[in-house]
Length: 601
Image (cartoon, rainbow, N blue to C red; front, side, top):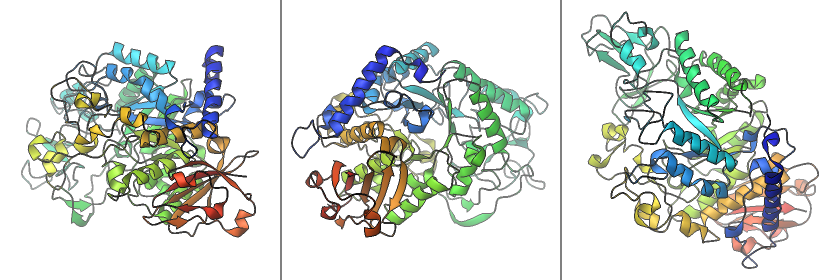
C-alpha cells in the first residue's frame, strides 16, 4: 500500500492547509518586522503532505532524526531516558519536521557499550520500557506521520547472548561455529599467542583467550562483543529472522551498525602495519583484512530482497565509513540499485573543515558518481564530537552551525540529524577519568576521553536537568550550556538556530526546486564561497551561497552563466538581516560564514 493510499481525506485537507501556510510564511508576507521572518510561527510540513502525487519513496525527501534513547527524555524519574519519554516528545519532533526517528539500540543488553552489545534481538530492555511501550510509540508516531527505524547490530552480539553462551560452552557445541573461534599461533603460550595481529577498534588485540576451551574468539569491538561468523548460513538466517520480527511489528526500516565489518579474511592473514599509534598505544594497521570485504555485498542484496517483500517502502540505512565515493557506490548496488537505499555518505559531513573546494568536490561526487542513487549526508551522530565543536572557530560558531544546516537541508540529499543538533548542543566530555561512562574513554584516557560528551541529555528548557529528568542525578550530567541553549528558549527567539532549522525544513518541504530540482554547482573555482543552484522545470531557480571563511566575501556569478538565470533576486532566507531586501546579486556581500538563499527572477 502506498503512502498516499493511507492518507485520509480529512488529514489530506489539514496537511494541504499546512502547505499553504508554510508557503505564506516563507514568501515573507507574515513577519514580525520588515527584516526578520517570524521563525516561531512557521508550520512545518511533512513529506507525506507536501507531495501527494509524487512516485518517489518517502525516504528520498526525508528528515531522519537519530535519538539516543538514554538521553532524550526520562519519563519515570530514574535518570535514564526511555520509550515513553520519546512518545511524550513526539509533538516537538513533528513541529521540527522530522519524518523518521532512528532509535539507537533499545534491546536487552548488559550495557557494556550502551546497547550495542545485544543479548536479545527480539525484545526491549526494561530500562527503556516494554514491547507494549514500543508499540505505543510506533502508533503515536504514525499519527504524526513519523516513522520508526531500529538500529540493528549484525556484526556481533553481547557475550551474554544465549547464542554465545552456548558457543563458548564447548568446542563441539552446535553453535560453536556461530562465532569466530581459532587456536593461538603455534609456538606461543596463551593468552599471549593470538591467531594474528589484528587490533580491536576499541584498543589492543581483537582476540580474547578462553581458558575453558583453549581457543581465542574474535571481537572487532569490545571484548564483550564477540563477532558473529557470517560464513555460517545459520547466522544469516537467525539475524534475518530478527529483522523480520521488527518489520512485522511495523518499523519503517533499519540503520545497520558497523555493517562493513561482517566478514574477515578467512585465512586470518596478519594486517599490514602503518605509521603511527592509536589512542590506546597500539600500532596502526590497514583494515583490509577485516573491513569492507566483498562478501558483505551478497548479504546486502539478500537483505534488500527481504525488505522489499514488505509494503510501505521500508528503508535500509548503513553506517558506512568508507575511503571514497567509489566504495560508497558499491553499497547502493551501483547501477543495479539492489543493496542499501541509503548508505551514509560520511565524505561531506566529516570533512571537519569548511573548505569550499573540498565540499564542492565531495558534494559533486555524490551527484554524479553514485549511479543516480540518493545521497544521505550526515554531520552528527552518537560516535563523534558534535559538529558545533568540529567546525566551530570559537567566534562564529552559531553562523557556522547555520551554514552546516543550510548545506545539509538544501542539498539534493536525504538528511540525517542527531538530537540537539538543531539547538547547537556542544560536546561536553568528562573532566575526570572517574566520571567516564564510555569504556573507550576508560581505556584510552586521557588521549581518548570517550563518547560521553556527545551523548549528554537533551536540553528542553532551563528547569532542573534541562527538563530531561526529575531525578537527582542523570546517567550523564546535563551540560551547563542548557541555561541558554534549550528548546524553550530557542523557540521564543526568531533568530535562533532551532528556528533556522524549522525554516529550512519548511522550505525543503514546499519549494519544488528543493524537493525535486537538480543541483548545479556554480562559481566552481571560488575557494571561499560554495554556491549552487536548485532548479526544477517550470519554477524559478533558487541560489544557495555559503561563505566558508571568516572574512566577508562578495557573491560572484560568472557573467555568462548569469545571463541564463535572470536579472533580479528575492531573498528567501538569510542569516544576515542586512541581506533580507536585496534585489540584485551584485549587491550581495556575505558576512563571515554567512548563508544566503534567494529566488532568481
